[in-house]
Length: 153
Image (cartoon, rainbow, N blue to C red):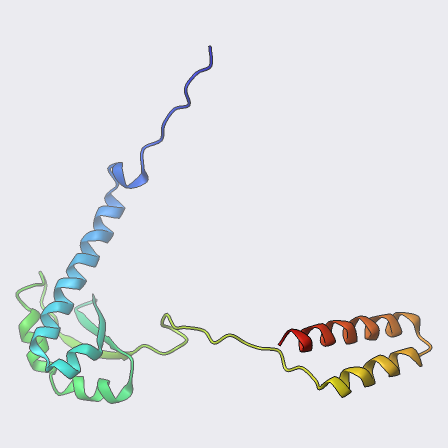
């Protein structure tokens, strides 16, 4: 008789102190961000993206230098509003800018820069007059591929 395969528990169902700690940190950051946004005007609250506490410093992230300079005016209001949510006192507020390199952004679809049909035909004609067989075959393949891509546009 065939044995039934043993079922595995989901990894999150197992007691895991590391995961519990990470989830508690995420929840704390969300509570702090909510409190920060409550103190700020609506237009500025929309531009406040993330926050975290690191070494008695509160790091607040926004996506533009303009909004970062506006957030600095609310330094003391932000620090006093979150003191009840944290265990240890926060000494400093740092405003950080999320750049395209550090943040999650949409990447633009890159398109090939194709030569004109006349240029493709010129590559094909010149490939037939080359004495090196490998180079001639490579240029023929290139012209065929370029022509196929140009026609599929």
